[in-house]
Image 1 (cartoon, rainbow, N blue to C red):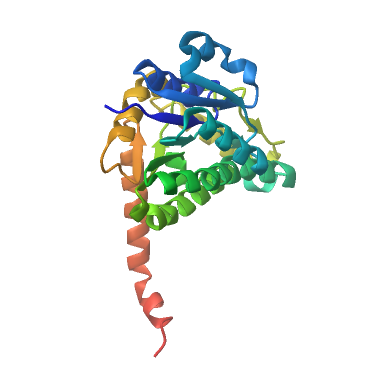
Image 2: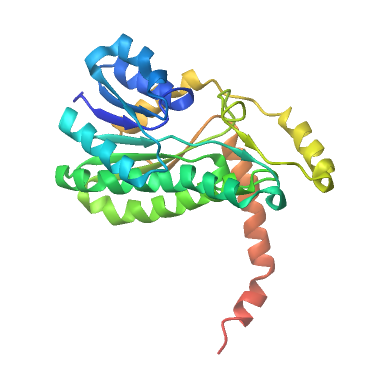
Length: 273
């Protein structure tokens, strides 16, 4: 199989780190980015010249374009981009400050947009490329206490689906990776928590009880899956990681269909003559 060049944001830990290792271990090249470049030393020590570590804060549009250009100059091409940088913002919608909301969108949504815009001219010239957007099952269904996180992922899903149709004839593929619950640092030190309002305490307690039924996946098990997606001749636009998301989505979509059908008479009335 032809060697690929990957550009992965958020490579210091979690999914980004596991996927960088999976690609490097099979002989691919990886541009690994992180806000703290020192966190990438282990990759560089183990894989040497096969990895190019770059400092990158994805909220800086100019920096995203510069990083993509450095990656292209260094390896001569970019085959796979993985927009993985992101974090969870935990809090009820009423609790979220303007600064918290903007920061969430700047990283999870705009960061992926800037990197995507930066790499598209290169992939168009190559007439090939694969952009993987790390979304979430929370990119298609939503629950309490993660409203702005969901908003950032729903926005990512929307522009990525449009993009997939815009660039399909250019040999560029787009895949939305939608993990369920995994034992990463997403809900740990990487997370941001709002200042809680007492009015939502009961809902918060009920939500905490629900987390006990989650079956968390092993991030190390996802490496093979990402390689299979990257190597597919016709990769999916959307794919879940983990056992649980499909059933969650089936239940939610069935409820949506039932509601739309129940109210269809009002929808038809709104059509007019």
